[in-house]
Picture (cartoon, rainbow, N blue to C red):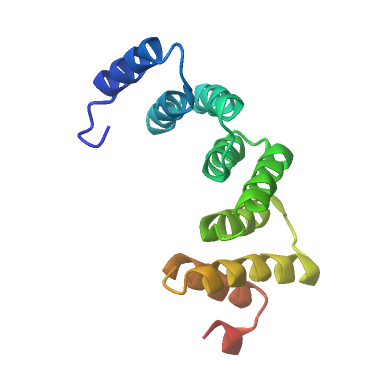
Length: 153
């Protein structure tokens, strides 16, 4: 995958499923799901993330499934996956970041409470990872949208 040989990678991942018949196949399923994300077949990625989770649930798999569901416009289910990921590991800065982005992308006219929630998610991401630059940028953008230029700066 890192070399951009997506079809070769998929073949290798599928072969690993054959060899893993008696073992946990979660990693192989997750790799195939990643292949489908990279090739923009989001419904297939969802299918394979679900298979990976059925073998061995993890916070990162729920986060990845949430990302695919979000791309597929299944926002409620994506949010539920993000919540499951955070329940398993509350230190996933990217999940808080993704919850804020998803909220921002799906609310036409955010209320002050909506903005406060989105900022809160970004602040949690920053608290976990103070070097999470996109979280700072999005937080500033949210303040600018509300006319709070001083807070944005």
